[in-house]
Amino acid sequence: MQTLPTILLFGLATSGIYALMAVGVALIYGVGRIINFAHGAFYTLGAYLTYLYAVRFGLGWWAGAALAILSVAAIAIAFDRLLIEPIREREVIVWIMTFAFAFAVRELIVLTFGARPYSIPAFVPGSVSILGQAIAAQRLLVVAASVLALGFLWGFLYRTRTGKALRAVALNRTGAHLVGIPVQRAHAAVMAISAGLAALAGIVISPINVVTPDMGLEPLLMAFTIVIFGGIGSLKGSLLAALIVGYAGALVSFLWAPELVTFMALVVVFSVILVRPTGLFGLAVERA
Amino acid sequence: MSSPGADSGRKERLRPEALQPYAPLLLLPVVALLGWFGGQPLTITLIYGATWATYAVGYDMFSGFSGRVNLGYAMFPATAAYTSAVLSARFGVPPLLSVPAGVGGAVLLGAAVGALTLRIKGIYFALSTAIVPLALFQLTHVFGKFFGGEEGIWGVPPFFSDPRLDLLVVLAILGAAVAFSLWYVRSKAGLILRGIQGSDLTAQALGVDTFRFLFVSLLCSAGIGGAAGAYLVHFQMLVAPEILHIVTTLQIITFTQVGGPGTIVGPAVGSFLLVILNEYLRAWTDLRLFAYFAVLVLLLRFSPEGLLAPAARALARLPRRPAAGGRQGKAT
Image (cartoon, rainbow over all chains, first blue to last red; front, side, top):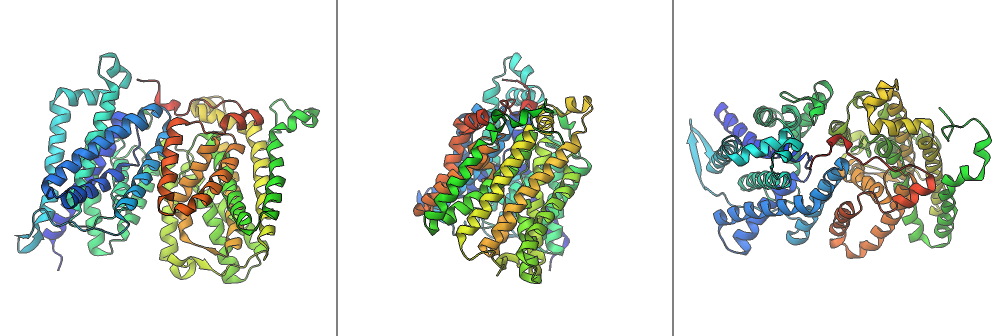
């Protein structure tokens, strides 16, 4: 029997994953001016690298997860520096590049691990009873991890000098450049942070779902839905939209069918783009 | 619409130089001869080559000149393919009628999508077009009884039993598409499209009804992709929902990118080259897709203008494109 607390908690966990993804997409767009279709690849890589480090290298799940996040961040820096930076000003080519990179990563994963699904054991086994409902402890970990990570991100962006510099680049690149902020390093830093958050999302969710080469597709689609819904480039908008879309998704999959969630997302995006392209909190479209 | 050569009017069209941009069409008989005498596997590869080349030309004549990336271009070949397949396999309509009906379906879809999306641009246009094939894909599954769901539609009647005749038809479609697109993009309308790519605000300030030009161009683009897509189902004798996958559109964009966007001929030649390359890579099976995307990444990184672009542009006497992505200003 599905009851209110279950829906509340499931919705919160889903929102957390979506928020981790969406905030990264929004940051990369805000600071780096890139629509990053490769974000799902970072999510997927996080889960696979965790498996690689934990099982094949025998490091254990916690160390494997930490190392996987760092590796994904390093890969993201290389991606930004070597592949994106030289063509950054060519908007369309950058989109295709991020797509191509995502598919290349997918194929590399298939070559290395095969197309079969993997399962990862829960980081925190067992379940917790909340208001008489047994909830898997892993789902609570998802909520805790996303709240913590987003809290740290907020503190970093709004309380530190580096964070301030990143926000300055987002506001005005030329101006930031003029006052001596290393803009290219800001791009790389944001790519690394966002990729790390995506990897974290992929890792904490993988014991609940399964690990497959295409696991990143759905969260990528949802992240774009959320970013467009919340207004491209607005972090607060993305967070609020993640909560709305996460809960709407949980409701739709409880009341009707999980397959309808994607369809719902498509309807949301299409209507928002047509009716209010700036989203809930968007800046003027052409600020971008 | 106006005639080719902006300052037309006189007999200029009869001068031999005026035909120079169309010279690459002479390659088509060569391809036809190769396919006719080269054995069945080559014939089939060339049929696919010509089909993808037509898709790429259709994509390029809109997106390569207006700068609006149609991330859902596969919706046009797919709609035409499904329309023609349903009409001929389910209702017994002869292919000679169902293919034009398929093209009509694609153009209608183009009109609907264009009416909704052409007033927006940049990433918003790209994303909203990308959503259409995703939604159509869901429809083929929701109405699985009618559209065959996962399986697609089988038993579509063929035109000919000899694939060499099919090759002649698809090459004719390609030739018509290239000739029309070259004429179109070199006409005044093409000039205006490039103006819209440069700055649609300026174009509007000059009194140009930008929507109308984009709309007509999108309809032509839909019709071209539709013609090739509708014909292909009768050669394959089936249509599967994979054609609506984003990978189809990405592949079209890749071919265009390799050939040189905004040159019409470049994307067509690029498609042939890549389809043939893909055929030879088949021996590698596992590595094939990875090699494919890795090559694409490297091409984008080291030759963002496209490999064949300079040659194709010189031949068609098209100007260099404005550095793409001018929207972003000049920071860093």
